[in-house]
Length: 127
Image (cartoon, rainbow, N blue to C red; front, side):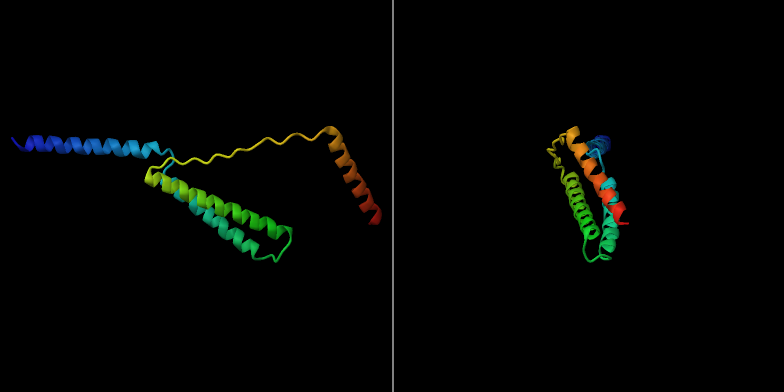
């Protein structure tokens, strides 16, 4: 008769552990497996961007590729931090305080269009 209470307590402990693990895994929203997939994707993009950046020695394209590399590395760092926060059960949020850019007035836009037209005409005359 002593095995029934032991069996019952064991069954209760297993059920409680299963329920608790479901709660913990579900509370994260995004799993570490999904983050691992994102990290793998970003690592691939970093490798491609590094290879592409090495083809250039300077100029605008090189600068844009280096900017892309910096953004990808920052993204990778943020994903790693998010993954660590899930493992350690720490609430982590990234807040960006952005501001909407004001629209340019019509007079300014017309002035820009006039400058473009003058530049195109100047170029057409030279050719």
